[in-house]
Length: 497
Ligand SMILES: Cc1ncc(COP(=O)(O)O)c(C=O)c1O
Figure (cartoon, rainbow, N blue to C red):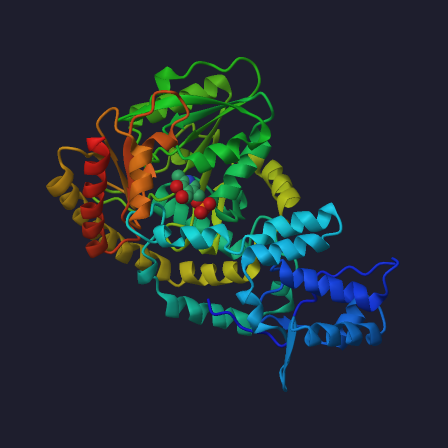
């Protein structure tokens, strides 16, 4: 995103108080420290003296005096006709000198807290960025294939015609036509038994999982969790203090028979039955029935995370657990992050009718309602058929990418990596021989611009099988091939140790 220099700018935090120093000195000190500590960066526009005086509720004179001094000492520079800026030479100051000089002026611990958070000039994500887009970034769809122009047209359509209604507070459950469209899609494509009254639009399935924790679990309750499983879900679901009990996963999905009843208190179980994360297996029918029966007997809730089931290559997508007979204890969650793009931050939750009120109450407590403009755009995208077309198109692309990755792994790494299941989704997991340090593989791969997840990092229990979770959806075929090549070098290096 290009950085624009706005004519109107924020007034930086400069406190003026009734203290012994004259006002102009307080303003001068405030700006000087902010510049030295890097809170105000070289080239950044400074508000006009009039705007600052207004904001601080003081006369303009002390502001003028302070700015004159700052200009004179070279902290600020004027550019004729366009305003006053932090001097562009400021960035030449060595970071340590700048922060040491700034430190001398820090007056209280509050200033110190601001200083430490802003002193390290590079935000952490700037350093991680390179690897994030490399092969085999997990969870990233093929963003280069997204119909940007079409999406932009829909955004413009709604942005141009924003009504007062769409600018006001919205429905906490989400925009009703979108809930209808999501319910239609889920009934049709995923065999979910629902209508719009059970659908809540949320900010990604992460929020849905967090809401599940708030509605279903309190401190000391038991959360049964797939092992290995999706760490993000574990964090969200355990947020209200539930105790996590890992349940093993084998080739047929969650090992329901391994689950011991919880002692007292409520309990919930998190599952990804259609496409287990990370192993990629799907839960067979016998296991599904056993799980539903187990939940009925234990009066436990089942949280079904159906995050990427639109993409299945060798057979038809499996229906959702939620749509089976006797599934009235299932809370179903899903997301548009994988089928569209993650920055959209739109997901959904389908609650059993008896829990809709409780979910709405928690939703309201957390965040009043979902952002309206994106919901309007997404509703059109779904209702005008673009969504179905997009999913169909992407399925073919992902299948090509999946085939390329599988072939290359078999060709180069067949003796070392054994793929668990690659029938669906946008990633696959491959096991490494026992004793292999998968975390070290990931670390070294990262240094070569390759991103992968260590299978061992997805476990809660002590037995942690080594392996690699490799995303292919967001990676062009040529990069997958190059990625496997680089990976084979890393594996050879780690294997020799
Ligand atoms: C299994 C699983 N569930 C949920 C999510 C979260 O998705 P969202 O972006 O909708 O929060 C992810 C994201 O990678 C995931 O892999």
